[in-house]
Length: 324
Length: 98
Image 1 (tube, rainbow over the protein chains, first blue to last red):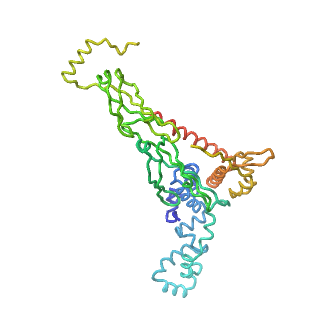
Image 2: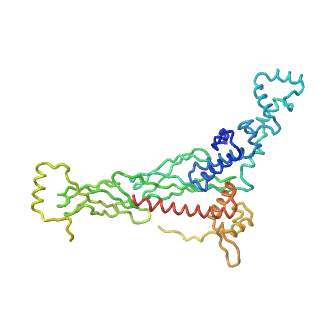
Image 3: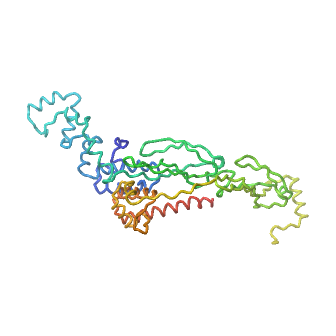
């Protein structure tokens, strides 16, 4: 058991002195957060099992007392063992067992309680006891096999990954431990899309089938591109004379550079569409690529530029604020 | 691309109960309480889609995890379904505004 070496109090986040009330409150709160049907994170399943196991032990005053006395192995300690005797027997088991037993036998029972042979005790610890009784109650309240819950995990992709498709190695922490799997992400996934990995979700109990794992695709922000569905938007920076006279510009797309013809008389905000150059669509029309014109002027024009702009200003009758 | 037309597989009460590992009467009660969807044919027999097995598993887990009664489970599963639908909307639509 993965949870066996964990401290049950720490799992529930309560001090060892916590009242039964506090233990119940802590458990209810944690259970609400990490129940596999509420929290889709694959790691939540393991957390839920751990807190359930901790609560199963600490909620019952009797098993809690035994857990406090004997520690995580308390299930292996026979029911009728007195904690004091146990502690003493454990301490003496290494060196002074012989001497101690001699003195004890001579003086009768003394305050020691029931007469216990150290060998019997250790035999119980390593022998076949324990198991049977404690294992059965962990399965659930009288039900047979229950299939596992569906889980969700996010994968972040770059725009280029979404365009070309990619392979990812996922590392998931779940109740069955940490596992890695190689996932092929097809070309043309969109932001927010879910990829179903059948049978990779939460484990079912008693051999029931597991749930599915859904990968939610997140496409990371990109310096050059803005994405709307499958349409890609790129900024197209133009000088005033390029915008006025028209030009040909190289635009970077996920598939490589594309020559774009900017018609004369292009103002800021005009969108030039490259049909089908957006993200591919495995089931239909690919998205488009839109180059959005943005006219830039030199922040500090040279003397010559300044002169030419002044002449243009004197000659031109163009008024961008006049409604046509 | 072409897809074959497949008649949806459905299970009767006994088949479904056996697949879920539960007593048919308990399944019938889930349906009566409105926490499990089933179709009723003209003869009054209940029919289930195999996907409903996951719904039954969720009912069992919620009951075991929170000690909920079946009325409360109905509320919780409805809310969880609504949240899932909202999250799906946010996931696809909300991202567009960036």
